[in-house]
Amino acid sequence: MSDILKTEAQLEAIYGKPAEAATVKEVNWITPHYRAYIEASPYAALATSGAEGLDCSPRGDKPGFVRVHDEKTLMLPDRRGNNRIDSLRNIVRDPRVALLFMIPGIGNTLRVNGRAHLSVEPGLLESFAVDEKAPRSVTVIEVEAVYFQCARALVRSELWNPERHVDPKSLPSAGQILAALSQDRVGGEKYDREWPGRAAATMW
Image (cartoon, rainbow, N blue to C red; front, side, top):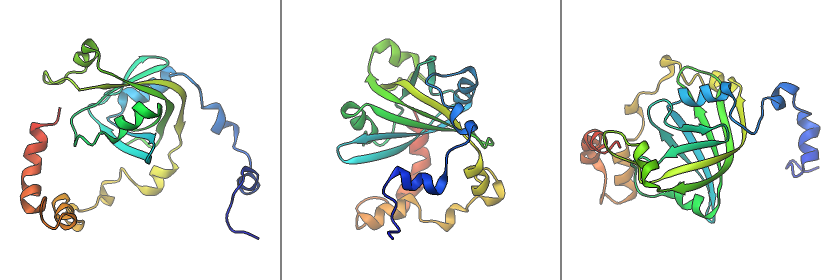
């Protein structure tokens, strides 16, 4: 007997059917309750798919940074980053996206699946400006599924427990990682020392 599961029937034989609470929570529009979660969230993970494979990228800003345009549409400004544009490159080739919203101190998360396109309409970009700095594009998401995820993962991980926070000095810094991977061409102590100021100056 193989130890590798290959069919849905095999999965269902082990896991059984989901309870009604696990299915009734999924809808194809943004309910008032789900809107409250989105508008309270300062952080989301954006998943996309492209020719090279899957990608999952962090997105964060002030609470409500993902705009609820209407009950079927979300808008996500693309703030300044490293210019790799992995997520955006994927979206222009494959519109399927997923978002996982998290709220500090809250156990439940919110999941959104849908299809996206990128807009550079001047008025829309300007409406997302912070400190007079507009994003270079906005990801417009047509919602296909929305549902909350129960708190088990965050309870098990104790993610919001300050006593479980990791000392940054116990892990390699960004500068150390870059230096090791580039044979010291980039990164190092200078990178780590200058990063806070550079990030503050280029946040938006």
